[in-house]
Image 1 (cartoon, protein in one colour):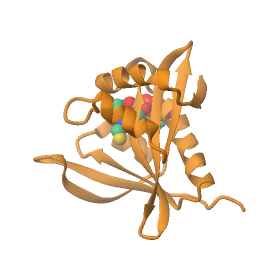
Image 2 (cartoon, helix red, strand yellow):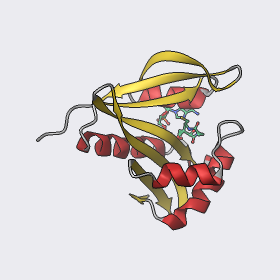
Image 3 (cartoon, helix red, strand yellow):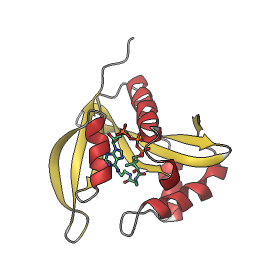
Image 4 (cartoon, helix red, strand yellow):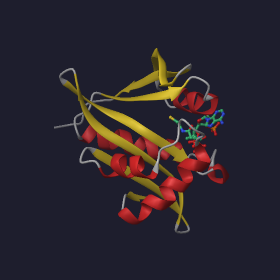
Length: 154
Ligand SMILES: CC(C)(COP(=O)(O)OP(=O)(O)OC[C@H]1O[C@@H](n2cnc3c(N)ncnc32)[C@H](O)[C@@H]1OP(=O)(O)O)[C@@H](O)C(=O)NCCC(=O)NCCS
């Protein structure tokens, strides 16, 4: 399993994997995926196996109420590659990048009905903060999860 940064050529495979991973209204359009992945504040980690995309995470470095946080835009692992620890590796790398950038925490939204993702985030030490009603649309709520990060050594 190779972890590496994003290249523009990755976009089509990322978009295709997102379509497999998420139904509407959770999936991104191609344009939205490009904007999220190519934003200046984005840190994208690609997991590759035998030159094929196995998973990816898009992290944004955000300023929130005077402190920096790492916001997980999306985390996608190919169905045939799941339960091999790939998401754990991707989030570890996002944590490392967020720490390096001086972030105090990782934060994310997850659909309240996404049991697999909720179990995953709990298993790696995320805490549930609160529910955001209709975050994804009418009647579709999200949980906000966060994980505090140890400050990077100066
Ligand atoms: C959620 C997701 C990213 C997990 O990816 P993964 O690579 O399979 O996760 P890992 O193998 O790193 O799992 C680590 C641990 O998380 C927990 N976990 C992961 N998937 C789980 C599931 N389906 N059910 C229960 N626990 C699960 C387990 O504790 C697992 O450890 P174990 O396999 O030793 O029991 C993947 O299922 C996925 O891409 N889903 C669709 C997209 C999505 O929902 N993304 C997150 C939205 S915010």
